[in-house]
Image (cartoon, rainbow, N blue to C red; front, side, top):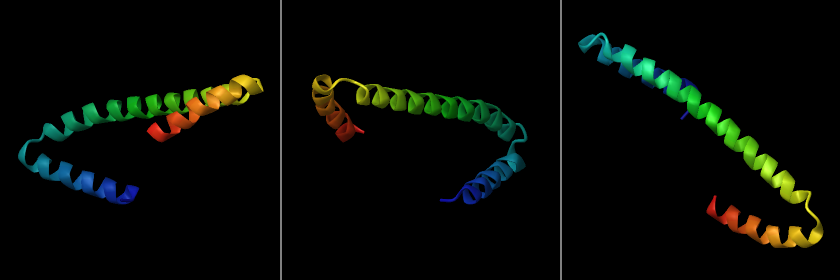
Length: 79
Protein backbone atom coordinates (compact mmCIF):
# COMPACT_ATOMS: atom_id res chain seq x y z
CA UNK A 1 0.00 0.00 0.00
CA UNK A 2 1.50 3.32 -1.02
CA UNK A 3 1.78 6.36 1.19
CA UNK A 4 -0.74 8.29 -0.92
CA UNK A 5 -3.27 5.48 -0.52
CA UNK A 6 -2.78 5.43 3.25
CA UNK A 7 -3.26 9.20 3.45
CA UNK A 8 -6.44 9.06 1.34
CA UNK A 9 -7.89 6.19 3.39
CA UNK A 10 -7.07 7.89 6.69
CA UNK A 11 -8.52 11.20 5.56
CA UNK A 12 -11.69 9.49 4.38
CA UNK A 13 -12.19 7.68 7.67
CA UNK A 14 -11.58 10.86 9.67
CA UNK A 15 -14.08 12.74 7.46
CA UNK A 16 -16.72 10.07 8.09
CA UNK A 17 -16.14 10.22 11.83
CA UNK A 18 -16.25 14.04 11.66
CA UNK A 19 -19.78 13.95 10.25
CA UNK A 20 -21.03 12.18 13.38
CA UNK A 21 -18.82 13.51 16.20
CA UNK A 22 -16.81 16.66 15.54
CA UNK A 23 -14.25 16.19 18.32
CA UNK A 24 -13.32 12.54 17.65
CA UNK A 25 -10.95 13.18 14.67
CA UNK A 26 -9.23 15.90 16.69
CA UNK A 27 -8.72 13.47 19.54
CA UNK A 28 -7.47 10.75 17.19
CA UNK A 29 -5.01 13.10 15.49
CA UNK A 30 -3.94 14.54 18.84
CA UNK A 31 -3.01 11.08 20.07
CA UNK A 32 -1.69 9.62 16.81
CA UNK A 33 0.79 12.30 15.83
CA UNK A 34 2.87 12.15 19.06
CA UNK A 35 2.76 8.34 19.03
CA UNK A 36 3.94 8.25 15.42
CA UNK A 37 6.78 10.63 16.28
CA UNK A 38 7.85 8.52 19.28
CA UNK A 39 7.73 5.31 17.25
CA UNK A 40 9.81 6.85 14.48
CA UNK A 41 12.41 8.17 16.93
CA UNK A 42 12.54 4.85 18.78
CA UNK A 43 12.95 2.91 15.53
CA UNK A 44 15.84 5.14 14.45
CA UNK A 45 17.60 4.70 17.80
CA UNK A 46 17.12 0.94 17.61
CA UNK A 47 18.54 0.86 14.07
CA UNK A 48 21.54 2.96 15.10
CA UNK A 49 22.20 0.70 18.10
CA UNK A 50 22.08 -2.40 15.87
CA UNK A 51 24.54 -0.80 13.41
CA UNK A 52 26.91 0.09 16.27
CA UNK A 53 26.65 -3.44 17.71
CA UNK A 54 27.49 -5.05 14.36
CA UNK A 55 30.39 -2.64 13.83
CA UNK A 56 31.78 -3.48 17.27
CA UNK A 57 31.59 -7.21 16.53
CA UNK A 58 33.36 -6.72 13.20
CA UNK A 59 36.20 -4.84 14.96
CA UNK A 60 36.95 -7.66 17.45
CA UNK A 61 40.06 -9.90 17.20
CA UNK A 62 39.68 -13.10 15.16
CA UNK A 63 39.26 -15.51 18.11
CA UNK A 64 36.44 -13.57 19.64
CA UNK A 65 35.04 -12.82 16.21
CA UNK A 66 34.59 -16.54 15.48
CA UNK A 67 32.70 -17.09 18.72
CA UNK A 68 30.55 -13.97 18.31
CA UNK A 69 29.96 -14.82 14.66
CA UNK A 70 28.03 -17.87 15.81
CA UNK A 71 25.99 -15.65 18.14
CA UNK A 72 25.42 -13.20 15.28
CA UNK A 73 24.17 -16.01 13.04
CA UNK A 74 21.78 -17.11 15.76
CA UNK A 75 20.46 -13.57 16.10
CA UNK A 76 19.86 -13.26 12.37
CA UNK A 77 17.61 -16.32 12.44
CA UNK A 78 15.50 -14.67 15.14
CA UNK A 79 15.09 -11.37 13.29
